[in-house]
Amino acid sequence: MMFTKTFVAAAFAALASALPSGMVVRQSAAPNGAVQIVNNLAQPVYAWSVTDVVGPMQILPANGGIYTEAWQTNPNGGGVSIKLATDPSQADVLQFEYTQTPDTIFWDLSCINMGANSQFTQFGFAVVPTDQTGNCPSAICKAGDTACSAAYLQPTDDHATHGCPLNTGLGLTIGQ
Picture (cartoon, one colour):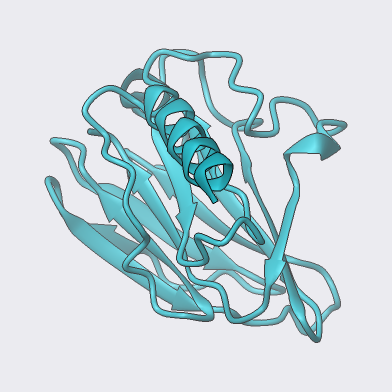
């Protein structure tokens, strides 16, 4: 029992030290079966969900704006991409991508369409699941990390894809 408590405490400390500056590890407030994106940047973030069609652009206001999306499927059989930008021109995009199967949600973060000087890179971002039992990993990109291994930087970075139980909620926090 003592080993388990020590291991859990050490794992939590290691995760906390990997977070973007000022970001606190806590269980995600995302509803089960959904992603909740929180914008902690000092500027708005523009979000649009893409399946086989491009959904309407949503604006996440600065300093705490929230966008929530329940898991959906793509009618053409592909995945879903929530594209995030700090400019409505849709340039410099961070993507939260997911695919729903009968019992698993596969997800990743993609920086492939994001510049090295992106606000997302400058202030960091992290995905934390509602499931804190170890059945679903977090993905953390520290502020300033232009080579974050927790996200796709090129199309072959398949190590950045994660699978979680379908009823998991995922919280994506952008910035401090």
